[in-house]
Amino acid sequence: MSDRKKVHAIVNPHAGHGKAGKKWPLILEYLEASGFDVTWQLTKRRWHASYIAQEYIKRGAKLVISVGGEGVMNEILNGMFAAVKDSGSLPTMSLIPIGTGTDISRTLRIPKDYRQAVDVIKHGREMQIDAGRTIFRLGDRTWTRYFINASDAGLGGAVARITNSVPKTLGGFLTFLLSSLVALLSFRRMKLKIWVDGKFVDQGLMTIVGALNGQFFGGGMHAAPMALINDGIMEFMYVKDANFFKFLSRVLARVYQGEHLAYHKVHLCRGKELKVQGEKAFLVDIDGEVEKAQAMSLEVLPKAIKFMVRE
Image 1 (tube, helix red, strand yellow):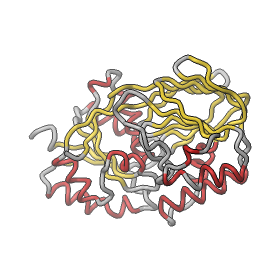
Image 2 (cartoon, helix red, strand yellow):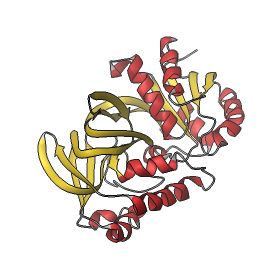
Image 3 (tube, helix red, strand yellow):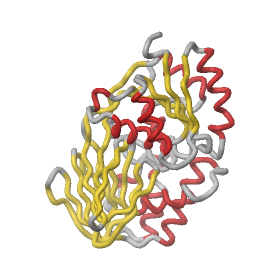
């Protein structure tokens, strides 16, 4: 059997308010009817997907399917890098997007209908895309985490923490929008310093500092319309000195259409490395998951991941 027919699926049954678990029997049936030999596991706890991915790689997996949102995809990615240090030896990734946050599927044009997503895996092509590697520091502790879509410090981390703690019955768009509004009401701007590609860029009261590989994040926010996911560059964006009302009216109200970039307090840099240093610890959103650090150093890994996309 060819490598493309033997697939290893990792399913977060709780993704999409339980939709992934309910739909998985139908997805599995369609995968097998499409000619795939499927090995699969359901995740049972946080980081379980990472361990499953490492076990699959030990078994020689060549094609891994993430079934769920960006959280399970991020855990799979980190498990793959934990198992294989040379990115050229990583299995190909694929996605059946069912979750609160499925923004990477928008950039890669992977349909949300599971049949169409399976058809992409069957008939599509491998595309080499960039990934990001972030090193966090908090006190004497340092740790590393990889991402595909986006990572941001500040408000995004607060939004992700709220989003991950509430029921997802409203769907991705409303869940992220309401979480953003709730987070913004209690959020206090942070004193941060920013470096891009080794050069000092700015400092001051920041609402958010983000690195975007894909074009979308936060349940459909078109934050970086110009972003290319395979150009070896990321869009580094930050908002400085914007009060609550200005951020609400000039940024949040316009970001879904990509019109926030016209606001002069939204700053954009393009580069390969980003460093953020805070006076105090800050929350970080990394592909929808939350970390807490006082400093983060991020670098682009050009074309480090093979991903199945439409032909």
